[in-house]
Length: 232
Image (tube, rainbow, N blue to C red; front, side, top):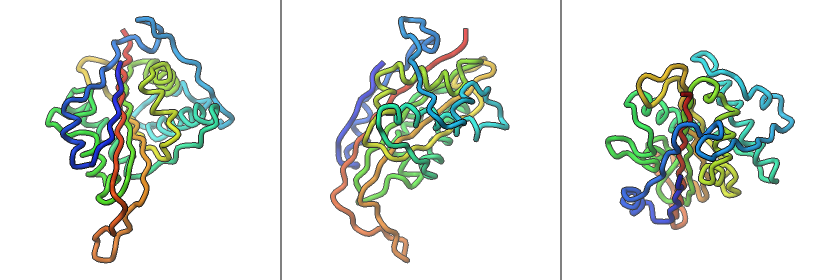
């Protein structure tokens, strides 16, 4: 598995993404197959983290996302890092991407029509002109018990690329999107996850006319990682 980072002006980043690859792990990453044991995951003191084995259903996805965030922040707290706060614009982008992967049966950061992470975060209003930003994305899907929040976070923490995004001291905000279904046909009881990480500085303040104020020279960073974990 590979996770690549980029630093470039926003107008140049889209071209760079065309050559970037973040490879999905083969099935079985969540149970030690292929030499990848599950990582130990700190549960922290928040009672929500104790529900990590919650089975996702169409009626409890908001709770599944909350438990996932609790577990992610517990990993950060165990290493002296501050918690990630949910951001509505990142939430929108993450949910849209999970739904899109399930609907169109693909598993990647770039859609079949070429829409990349930065374009999606621009559409949601998180990436704006005239600001500096850093973003990252982890995606995963699993079926059966491998799709519960604890197993997904364990598998992410066992993967260097995902772990780096989760434990980045630079990120301050996160969006989560959990959707019932798999990006592959014929897989029952599956759930697909997207987590979008971000931090912004010099955020443009909207004037009454709706135009952003001028911020400092924009810089960008992108980190991406994928995870596939399915029940055989």
